[in-house]
Every structure is written in C-alpha cells, then in structure tokens.
Length: 138
Image (cartoon, rainbow, N blue to C red; front, side, top):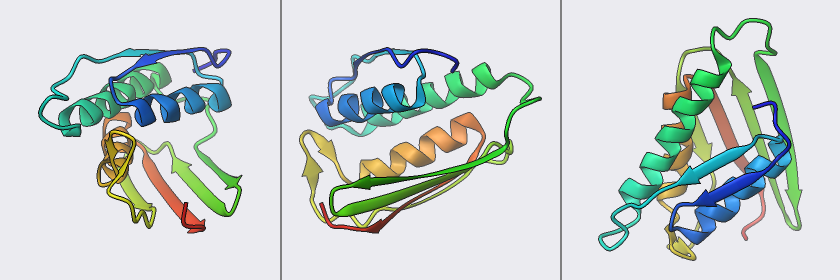
C-alpha cells in the first residue's frame, strides 16, 4: 500500500486492466496482478476473482488496522462526469455502487460486473465502500 504507483496488471480484460492500472497510479499502490481465467465462457469469474484477490491482499496489508485513518472520501471529475468514493475501513463489509451505467459493455468488461467488482473487493477487504456517479453519462 505504501508504494510508488507501479502496476503490472494482466487480467485478460482490457478495461479492468486499465482501471486497476489507474488505481495503482493514483493511490500509489504497487500491484502485480495476473489472471488466466475462463474468458472463453464470459468475464464473470475472472473479474470477480481478481476483485476478491485484490481485497484479500488489501486486508492482509492493513494487518491489525491500528494507527490508520479509518474514513476517507474522494471526488473525481472526468470531463462531464463526476464520481465520488467514500470508504470506512471498519472490518464490516458493505458496498453500495450507484453507477448508472447504460452500456452493455466497456471493451470486454460487462457493465453489470463493475458494481460486482466493488462489492467483491469491499467484502474481501472487510471495508464499507460507497461509489457514486453523481453526474455524467459517459
């Protein structure tokens, strides 16, 4: 978690790789994530398993969760869109992801999986996460 923002990510799902690479860069986490999933069937288990593995690694890196800032929030303006993420590192997993996605897919990633990524990560990381797209459609 106390890294430099270097990522080596290859999940086989291009948009997920892009988003996790952006996460490493902006959070300054160092992350190596490789997945050889069953993409010949669909993206569900590959994407879900990556989020679970990332959550478990995050939970392990936090250790006893002592001496850390428990609550945090951030806003991200992305052209016409505005997103907000709020986290409570509480050991009580919960997630609400209100994204208002209207496309079926972004690249090879099913849009229905994006909230599931947040839910799987929050459960495995044992944290409370709220992610909202406040405005914007793209």
